[in-house]
Image (tube, rainbow, N blue to C red; front, side):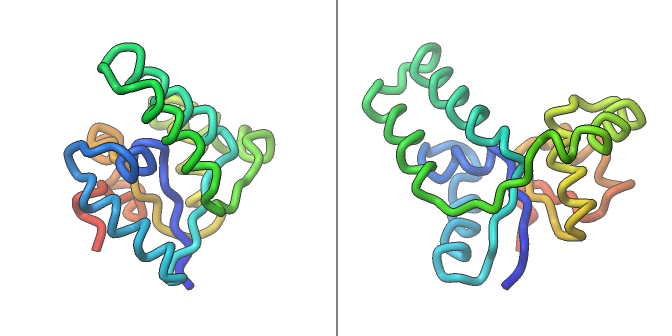
Amino acid sequence: MTDLVVDSGVCVKWFVVEPYSTEARRILNEYQAGRLSLLAPDLIYAEVGNIAWKKHRFQGLDATNARLIVDEFQQLTIRLTSSASLIAEAYTLAVAYQRSVYDALYLALSEREHCPFVTADERLVNAIGSMFPQVVWLPNWP
């Protein structure tokens, strides 16, 4: 089974139709088929919850559907790593590459686990992808 770090932008696309939702669903399907093990820093739950809230509050997503995102996401088995155990590495990466600590937590986990990190954040990939080839923009995931 292949380990794969995913960020909240990828995960939300499993539940909401957006650009690249089809590509995101391929990752979910591979996970559900037992071919992928999903990894993330523990802050992913707060991020997914916040995205669902923003979609409800500012983009007109029905409250019931926003809550379903949170509920259904909680049903998935994602191997979590505490942000506390990643923070030193993440901070160093954030300063060195001028990225947010939030993004750097995912990158630090990917580096620690020696596995790909798939993100829906094209700007992040453009900024660091040449230095971190394991960082893959969602539409480019196999």
